[in-house]
Image (cartoon, rainbow, N blue to C red; front, side, top):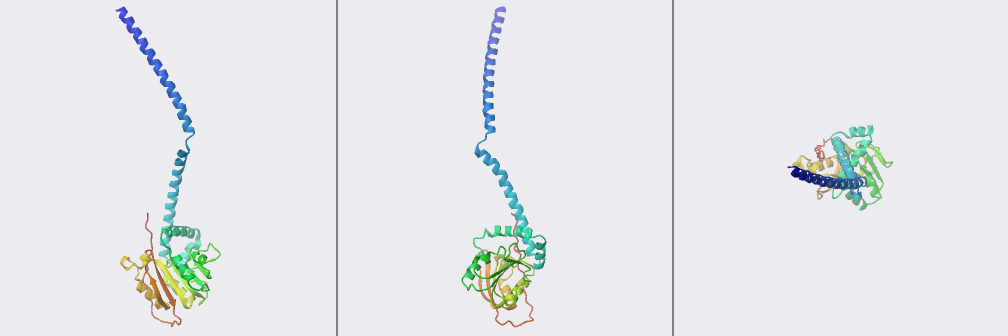
Length: 282
């Protein structure tokens, strides 16, 4: 029994020694790996840095765009559902809102395959450059920058010396002083007929009236105005319809000329209601 116990004791000692050697080897390996891992964490590769720094930036950009889009929709709805005088006072109190609106407007326009202002610029280039133009609701005065004509750029706020800040129904232009009056996506107020009446006042006899508007606003099947009834109302104001262009998917173009001799009439003009162009939330 003593010999067996002694043999068992020696076997246990050998097993314990082997376990100790194996454990020491593992600890050394772990320590070496830990140093390498720690070094790797301290000096990450460029692609890791790029990805980690890009994600927050991309997220913030998306949130900023979303907030900007929300402000634009709010301001856009305000312009379509108030009078020109109210809009003028609204932006006069805080001109920064106007910048916010036009930033959103330009972003929306960038999605259109073709912009109406470019067609109007081409129309003016095809006519005499001596024609004097009034751009009602000029925005960034792009029309004035694209032609050689003398252009009076009119809008609710002026951040440019060339832009005249005013209510579109009450401009500082002299009567019978303009050859071409342009409304490019700018018949926005609830009192839009008064904008057209102002255009009639400042236009010379046989002067041109060019209107570009969002197509959905003139779709009777979708709550929009009947384009024929709208044209008739403009004619009752003292114009003659020259042509209509419905070929574009996004907007329509209407061309009128002021009657050479406009006899005063007591006839009440029946203006159709223009559907507001409101953008959906995304």
